[in-house]
Amino acid sequence: MNKKSMYLKIVLGLAFLSLVVACGGDKTGSTTDNGVTYVSDGASGSKLVIELEDGGIEIPVAARVNFKVTATDPQGAPLVNIRLFCESEHGIAILEPSKAGVAFEHTGSVGAMSGVLGGLSPGSFLLECRGPQGFNLVTRKSFKVVGEIPQGFTGWPGAAGGNLGGGVFTDPLPEQVVLTQVTYITTGGDSDSRSGFIDNDLIIDCDTSTPKLDVEPFGPDQYSIKIENNFDQRISISSVEYVIDLRVGTVSALRETGGLVIEGNSSVDLTGVFTDTDNDIEAINPLFDKFFVGSTTPTPSGTFNMVFTVRGETVTGESFEETISSTVVIGPFNYCS
Image (cartoon, rainbow, N blue to C red; front, side):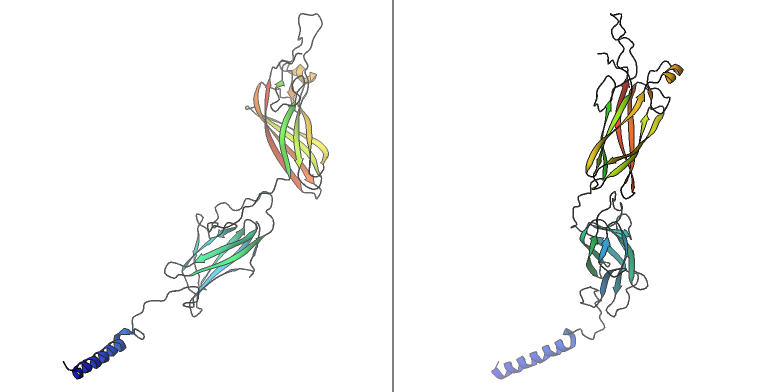
C-alpha cells in the first residue's frame, strides 16, 4: 500500500468516528431519562429544612416545643406524601411523631411534617432528618437546650430520639430534703437501734430470790428520724406520721410538730413516741402491756415494716413531703438488769 492510499484511509476513519460521536455518544436531548436525585446540598436544588415553630434554636429543659420539617423540589414545590425520618443526639427527645421509639411521618400537602421536641438536659444537640431511600434528602440542625433540670424530672420514657451519639452526662441534682435514717430509743434496751427490739411484755419481778419487788424497766419507746435540709435557707417541719403494717391491718398516728425549724444546709434528729403503756387501756385488755400511741391497738410480737412521712414548707411557702421505711422488731425481750 502506497502512502497516498494509507492517508486516505486515515482521513475516512476519522470522519466516520466523528459521525458516530455526533449521533450516539451524547445523550443530551434524547428521550432517555435517568431520573432526578433529590439531595439537600443543592445538586438538584431540592431542600429539606428543620425549624422550630418560633423560629429560634432554644429548647427549655423539661419543656415541649413544636417543630416542622419541610421538603421541596428544585422549583420550590412541596414534595407531598414522602416519608421523613428524624433522629437526635441524647439531650433532645422526639415526642411526636414517635412510634415504638422511632420518629417517622409522611409529609402533607405543603410538603411538611410537624412534630414536638422535648428538652432533656442542658447543652447543644443535633437533630437530623432524612427523606426516603432514593431521594437522598438529609438535613441537620443544632439546637440549644437551656435551663436547669427540675427536681424529679425524668424525661419522657418511650420517646424517640437520642440515638445519634453525642449528648452530655448530667449529674442529677441532690434532693433538697432527705430523710437519711430511722433509729429507735427503747426503754430498758438500746438507745440507738436500727431495728428497735421493742419489749411488749412487762416482767413484774426480775429477781424473785429477794423479797423486794424488782420491776423490769418498761415504758414508752421512741423513734428518731434524721432530716437533712439541703436548701440554702431554713425549712419548717409541720408534721410526722407513722404507719406500721401488722399484716392483719395497719396502725397510723399523726403528730403535729409545731413548725420545727431546720436551718439551711444542716440536719436535725426528729424524735417522737410511738408506743406507750396506759393503765386505762391495760384495764380493758390486760393481756397486753403496751400499745401504739394514738390508738388502742396492742403491740404484737413480730417483725414489721414502718413508714414515716415528714411534711413541711420552705421559706417561700412551697410544701414538701418525704418518706422513709424502717423495720421494727417487737417481742417479749428481757431488759432486767
